[in-house]
Image (tube, rainbow, N blue to C red; front, top):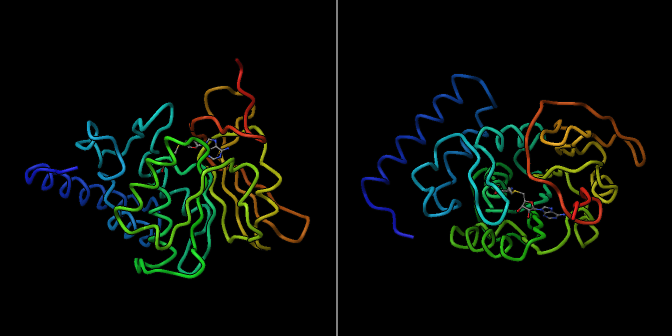
Length: 236
Ligand code: SAH
């Protein structure tokens, strides 16, 4: 995709303006805003929405999926306590944008080939998997992000434990396999639909021992439904 010079200038201005607003509002810690400044969101949206890349709104990607609003992604990273050196599992790669933000935070912007990739992301839909993977590949993020096609509610296919798990689609229950892949002290953030149909509560779970967890209700949010074995049953 080629972006013409004028549009490029406008996007840069919009991006800086948004960063200023986030900074002044004290929405999130500066390290998340710095990560935002390093990821070109225009490369993760469909061509017709490039001009809205730095409007803080969700945008449709493919099928019924959406790339979340920027502030939502940054808040999810903060709620998940992402920081330099941590590992994270994301369920719902979609465009790959949120995975890229996570990668910037945990590597502090050093996107170099790593033996064990700190960010893992699973996408259930083959078309979205290809879309997200291509976006991440073009920007070299596959050096630090492992992207797989599969049902994320069943956890990462390898025996690994993460500092953080971020679920970017709404379920009704927190999938057990995801809780089991948290390190002790690790945090899972996920929108959970408590029967309210079109909005959810963002839940934060912390693993405090092998078999105990604490739960905190955060803010009301709106995400697309989580599919898969422990997702929301689809009504035919
Ligand atoms: N994080 C994405 C947002 C994607 S929207 C971004 O930054 O663009 C939610 C995504 O979750 C969709 O792509 C959907 O296909 C995916 N999804 C839904 N259920 C899933 C599951 N069980 N496992 C993996 N991905 C799932």
